[in-house]
Length: 216
Image (cartoon, rainbow, N blue to C red; front, side, top):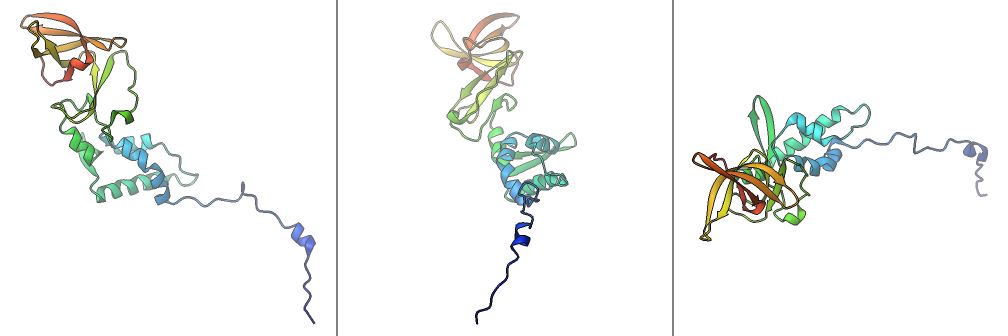
């Protein structure tokens, strides 16, 4: 005779249903969080960055009770990049700095690394829009030249710059001058060009202005 099963439907109906909003979710591992913040860290490390600044710029929020995870994640990524020889570290004023190795290679060929920005992609179509500033203006140099690899040159007021001029004989020559004023509408810079004890001030298109470490 087949065995009969007796089901307690009342107990089944009264059984609590799991609530996905109250049930604890499994927390992501350090490796999983590291993968999610890796692209941002690589972007940060294109420029030399202190360890404390890395934490500030990543700005990810670990779950409650897992605040130490942010330290674990950064350490995990820095160690991984270091093991793969992808980052260079150095100490400046007693503080450790980190920078991508390929960014370092590009930076060493620049005339003014503090005024020339090198991006990961050499194609300017993928470069971010320049920040607007009344006291500075940028010019993109998309080709390798004597000033370095493809880069964005930032000209600040009070900077000394190299200017490519054309004489009346139509021969080009270089002069050193001081940037005085920016005109964003015409993308020109008012430059004071010194000549012994005298000087002249000219509006120069940004395309004719280049970085220099020299002073007049």
